[in-house]
Image 1 (cartoon, protein in one colour):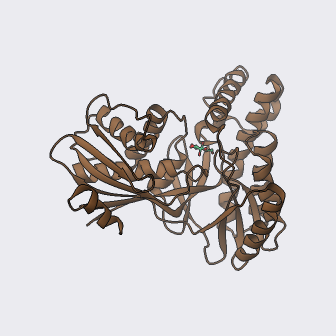
Image 2 (cartoon, protein in one colour):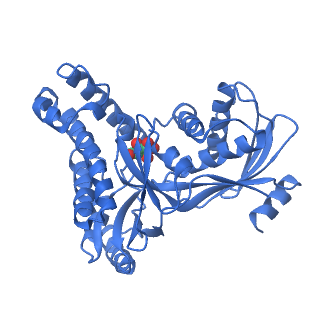
Image 3 (cartoon, helix red, strand yellow):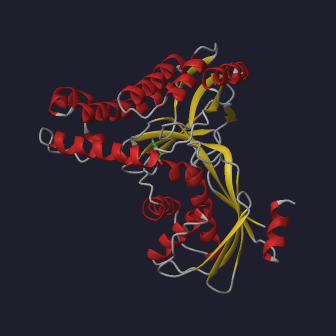
Length: 384
Ligand code: GLA
């Protein structure tokens, strides 16, 4: 049964819209978004997809094809968190945000299916949030911009789901463009689409299949260490609001006022922000050597200073870098497991795949997964 038929069989009616929103990989700019810094992600071809029809009442019924479970709730000012069907909290969360911001909503029947690997650090949750909010906008004819939907989806993840993420994942899921990398200033939300030369390079995504269980607590700890860095550096640099405002020169001058751990965290973020700008330029110039250096430097800092890598991610990067035709590699996303990426000259993808499939299981006992993706389109809606 295709999704349309499944919708009919479950809800006994016909869907009227279909929305899609992609997962992402971040080319460079890790743990910089919540420091008001720069990121450069691409949307990937794996998506969350929602088929939906409006209802005349205020009930929302959601069926997950992947979990084969159904969840229902009533639109109100107190939409409850679902401890059992936790997958439904993304729809609940975005609806909760829309209501809090005064949008009038009707009930809906929704069928959800996603092929973004879950728990792999490819932002399956941002994809579901964006697919859901775009569906609710369309069903209720809401006057709301994409950027506002992105902000509300991030707020849903922060406040409803309880993950204190930055804005990168929702932003690229909403605003990604086919064939383009997106350079984003996470403070102003100004962005620039930079063509990704898909005829020359491919992004190979290597899943360590190590689950990122520590992500929540460790992630929040990194955030507070950065905030502590800002408070301490403020004594020397009173004008700063976030690590984004600290130049490399100022950091080098004042870094000794920071405790070891905080200094290492700040070091990564401040240098990483510069790397994102440099990478964007190198990509425009197709300067592969520079791109490669920046990717690897990013990985090294994430491993040694930000301490969010793990042996399996390091191994993926090392293995990939040994393959001729690989421009550079690094871990991507929050870390502690999940995926690494390699930017590879076209035609060498197979060599990376073979090396990883052969050597990674021997060294770790884990079967990896590999995905290829050209930069893809952000959230969209189709009227059926
Ligand atoms: C997760 C978060 C993002 C970002 C990355 C790290 O994916 O959701 O907001 O902070 O980690 O760069």
